[in-house]
Length: 322
Image 1: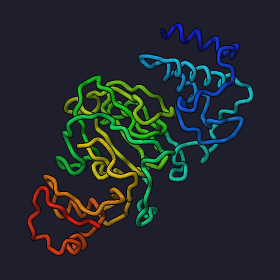
Image 2 (image 1 turned 90 degrees about the vertical axis):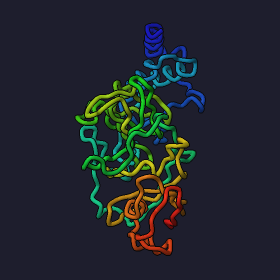
Image 3 (image 1 turned 90 degrees about the horizontal axis):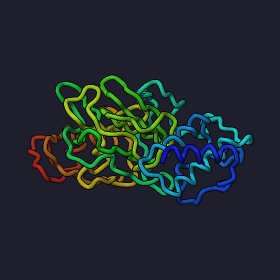
Image 4 (image 1 turned 180 degrees about the vertical axis):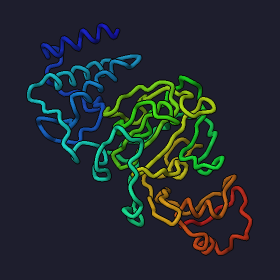
């Protein structure tokens, strides 16, 4: 099948007879164009466009719409009028939040002094796309301190070879083996968030590739510093790790709200759903942990609930947080 498609692709590149320069149907577009330039409607490099075509050819099954896309992308690649150079700040996701798109370092950590006290960002919308759970499975380890070190993500149980998908639309920034993370994919999204998928057995995307929410990016594994097959999943903003459970319901496999508050507090940078009013106490919660999660002081948290930290918290109890 792939051999036939490569022959078809070569035919498209040399003649453009089968597909011409016609655009694919709107619902088949594989990524978001960020530019309206006639010369470069996509704003991506030649290498990234080739990677995009390769990613289609790597699919286990290729349907008629995807064949149409291969031909369309190939016609752009072959066009002498196309100028496929990235213009800084114009075409890379979240260029208003980051100075560059560094593919060599794991995280570009912004100094906390540069953060506003509080800001709201959208995480789901018609333009940003919808959320897809990267892997449905039992949570083995939560965000927070573990064995004397900070665990900056959530571990999701899986079997080696299980499909792992992108949580949101975005562009792959890192796709390689990186020390303790093992085989890791880091995707930058259009709202400034980055998601991290670590310990993969195989990586199915390449740096600079544009991906959609729910698209296969790798296979579950046990690479790097890992005690067994699982997906280490992180959500970051400007390099700072956010608690994924403050943004995503891992019981219902969906976002808690379509927007989040990112807040600077004495505990660091935190995030929570923008409509948060109450917090339900879970096993392991304390006054300090709840206050930290919502960027509050314990004094303020107690004042909101008309009590003191001497009051014993019970699982299932609801605390006001706003």
